[in-house]
Image 1 (cartoon, one colour):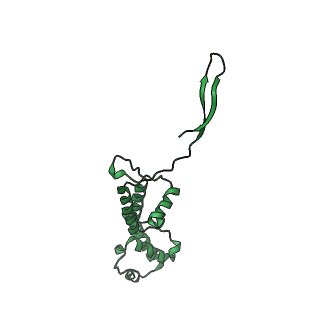
Image 2: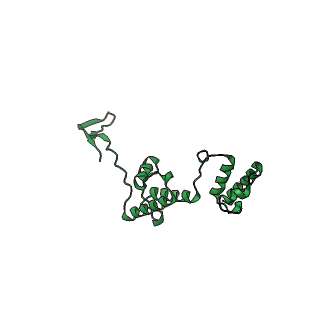
Image 3: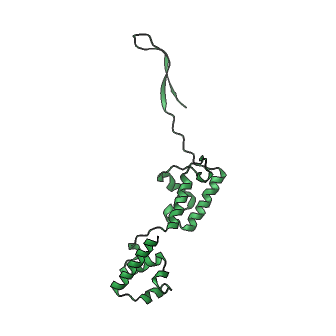
Length: 173
């Protein structure tokens, strides 16, 4: 994290020198006295401002707190409800976005990437309450496979099998 911050500071100072930007005016816009008092988001904003990029042209990288909360939520959703370690128990959803996205949208109100830190914390509490109540994901039962069964077969030495009885069609359950 410190290396990333140092690279932002270095880039900002290079841009200030190359573009002859008034440092004091730039820092006063953020109510700070020097670049070291700026947050990482403010540093990125300053760099984008000097480079002339609009917010739509910049790539947003999720903060580490949001990444951690998203990972915790996904773990809580996908871990098995029957794990021996209580801390590793989850709701047992399959690790498939086709199942996870609708579930998250239904219970959190939005997709996972658009949830804020406060929303993720509320959703995490809701998932813990669901887990505590005993709810877990139950996969739908597959349709029974139709099979054909033979009632009796008599095999004689050095001959072909002779079927005794009638063939029946039944389903295994």
